[in-house]
Each structure stands twice: as structure tokens, then as C-alpha cells.
Image (cartoon, rainbow, N blue to C red; front, side, top):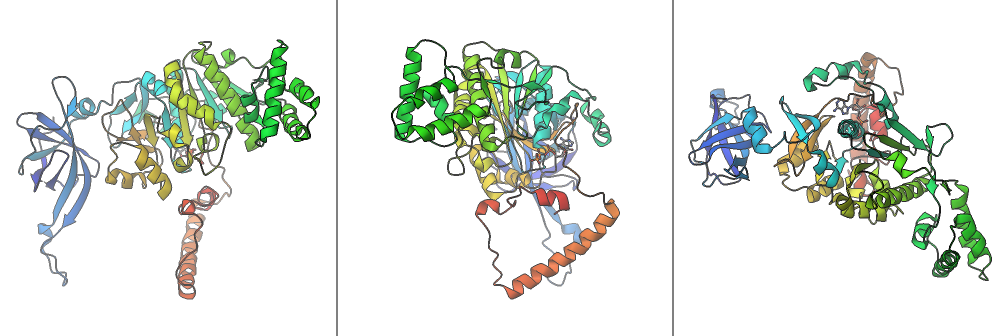
Length: 531
Ligand SMILES: Nc1ncnc2c1ncn2[C@@H]1O[C@H](COP(=O)(O)OP(=O)(O)OP(=O)(O)O)[C@@H](O)[C@H]1O
């Protein structure tokens, strides 16, 4: 138990915040602290901000350095009452109360970070495991949000490894073909060196199937094209049909259903061809585009084969045009949802990478898959179909979907609009935490979950299996020569910027505010050439 004081409570105190005069200069921002309260015992708090002042400092720089004071602004997290509930103290702390570093047991007990089996990582700068409850995670959905290169796919890989070890079936919508590498153990020497820190060891996973519609990329994915309803068909069409065309579609489906046999898209096309309408040709053309994709068949890949305990099914969309990716995701997610609703498959987790493309926020893009994503987000929990959305553009993900994610794993985010979206969607996020999100190192996340009482910073554990999302190296420059040229470039850029502001008005024309942080390239050029 920590017995050395690190400061004393100072000034006005309240039920949520207090300040203390720091006596130990090694106190850090976001560090957990405790204060003894006469009726409620130990109260857990967290340092939110630190400021220094020296009243003897003057403009002649004649001052007494020993008079420097450090003030810590802290939040009150609270104490566990007799019923195990986390509560704020019944009366405020008193000025002069002594502040100590919080013990690990008090942190674990107060925050509730060790209640589950899904090991995400360690409390930042602490040797304390943060575990989430697998049921809660699957039932109440999850989001992983971060700017590009900050560790989204890596963290997603950690989540998949943990779910797999709990035997939860996982289906991953993988637009970049990153996740097949999980079959191999993590061989990165840098990451291996950190494995002891997290008590994990390299491991490659079996029972992973890659599904694709390509010829040589694992198992073939064929979707059920039998007896599609008019709404399903409209979702699949490259463009929205006119009212007349919609009418023709309904008429044809009704007619085919009346014949009481199975029908497919080709039969639908033949039926519509028989109608006397000029509008039919454009509709037929669109239906033929869908039929030519060869994504549908009367013998589809059985959903039951894709979803079984401990199985990971990776839907590799690499190489497909965005509209075809949407068609695939729409049908597959519909089939998954219906199969789970009818209890044909066990409870499972559906992970959607690049979710801003499959469930885009209104005004940015429209996608046929948005409706089913919303349905899974709002109804999936009733049926045991969990959803994890992963995105580098939180502001562009449908709010209805994001707001249903009770676990949020937020890595570094700097775009002002994305920060705004996160702020709106996350309860209990302090201004200081928002500042912190902008400067998080790769792999450190802010974790918000129903399981945990307050948002916590987590050092995401290293992967057991190999990470497939490494950035492609463009040059073979040694670090030394690169550094030299970077410095040169820095000076060059400095001069460039100077001359710009002299010759111009000093205003730089920005695109929409959305691109204030990352260019249209999603930060690719920064990634390649450095900031
Ligand atoms: N928790 C971690 N521990 C160790 N290394 C990590 C961790 N998280 C990320 N990294 C490293 O950071 C790199 C970038 O991570 P990742 O590929 O997950 O980024 P991303 O946000 O998915 O990027 P993109 O948007 O470009 O796909 C990885 O190659 C990995 O080596």
C-alpha cells in the first residue's frame, strides 16, 4: 500500500473535481491517485492536468526556483459502497487532505477492469490487465476508431484472437485482405520483445477460412440468389430504379411467387422482358449487371459453414469495385442476420472494417448496406449477433450505428470533425481526455465500456498472430540518410511557408473542414514520407 504523500488537497473542492499541490515532481498526467475520506475510506481520483507556477518570477528573470509550485487538477472517480456500487464521496474532500498514489488493487476494484475474459491490454503505464466481458462485447457491439496508421487493424486483430480463444465465431468483412495472416505466429522481433510485458506468446491460428469470389483466394463465396424480394433486388441494383421500374419489379416478383417454384435473377429478367413497357430496358440492363457478377447461385455457400464455434471467416473483398463490395456486404449481412434470427447459427461477432463505406453517415455517401448495418446495430443484441465497426473516419460513420456501440476503442484521432463525432458519442469524456486522444502513441487507446466505470487509457497488447496490415515500404533509405534529408526538407518547407505568407494574404485555401487534418490520401503521403 502506498504510504508516501505526493501532495495535499488545495483550494475549493467539489464532488467531481479537486486540485492538489504536488510535492512529488514525478506525478504524471492521467495518473491514478487516492485520498482518505473520513466516512467513505479511500477515494480514487485521476490527475487530469498539471500546471506549474512561480510567484517570484519576474520579467528580469530574477526568481527563486525553489518557489516553483506544481498544481494538479484531478477528477474524483469515487469509492465502492457496501453494495459494490461506485459512488462519489458523500461530502467534499477537505483542503489539506493528503494525496497518495493509488494502489493497483484500489484501481482494479474501483474501475472494474478485471471482470472479463477478453484481454485487450494493460492500463497505460501500469502493469494491470484490462479485460472485457465477452458476452457484453458481443451483445452490445463495439467500435474501433482511429486515424490511419494508429493501430485500428492491429487492435481488431487482438479482439479477434481473444474472441477466437473464447470460441466465439467471428466473420470479418476485410476490404484490404489483411486478416489471413492470423494463421501465422507473430514473428516481429520488436513485438516479440514486448510479449513478456503482456504475458502472451507467438501463435498462429487454425480454423480460419478465407472466402472470396476470386478464383484462387481460398473458399469461394457464393450468395443465395433464390427468391429475392423486390426490396432485396433494389438494394443490389447499381442505381435506384424509377417508380415505373419499381412497379415492374414488384409485378414480376408477384408473378414468379404465384408460380410457387424457386426463381432467380435470370428468371426475373426473362419475366420482365415479356412486359410491354419502354422503361423495362434500363431495369433489365441493371439486373443483367448483377447477374453477370456471378455472385449469386441456387447453391450458395452455406452460412452454417461460415459460422461455427471458434471459427474465423474472413470475407476478402480485396480487388473488388466499391459497388460490388457493397452488394456482397449487403447480402451477406442480411443472410447472417436472418440465419441468427432463425437460430441456424450460434451467436457470433460480425466485424466490419472501413465501416464508413458500408454504413456511411447521411450526406457523405449512400450505401445499400446501411439499412442492414442499422438493423444489426439495433436488433442484433436481441438475437446474439454482435457488430464491431472499424473506421478511420468516425464522423463519416452512420450515427445510428455508432451510437449502438457500447464498447468504444479509440486510438489516436486528430481530425476536428472526427473528434467532434467521438465527443458526441462518448459519455464521461473529459476535455483533457479529448486532448490526450490527439497525441496518443500508436497502439495506445482510450477504452470506453459498460464493463468499466470510467474511460481508461489502455496500452493494447501485442498480437500473438502475425499482423497483415503493415505499411508497404517505398524506399530502402537507411535511417541516417533519411534523417539528413528530412532536416533539409524541414528547412525547405520552412522557407516555402515563409515565402507563401509573405507573398500571399496569409490565408490558405482549405477544402472542406473535413480535410483539415488528413488529405484526400487518408494520410498515405505522410505515412510514406513522414510528417
Ligand atoms: N498495440 C500495438 N503494439 C505494437 N505495435 C502496434 C500496435 N498497434 C499498432 N502497431 C503497429 O502500428 C502499425 C499500424 O497499425 P495498423 O496497421 O493497425 O494501423 P491502421 O490504423 O489499421 O492503419 P490503416 O488505416 O492504414 O489500415 C502496425 O504495423 C503495427 O506494427
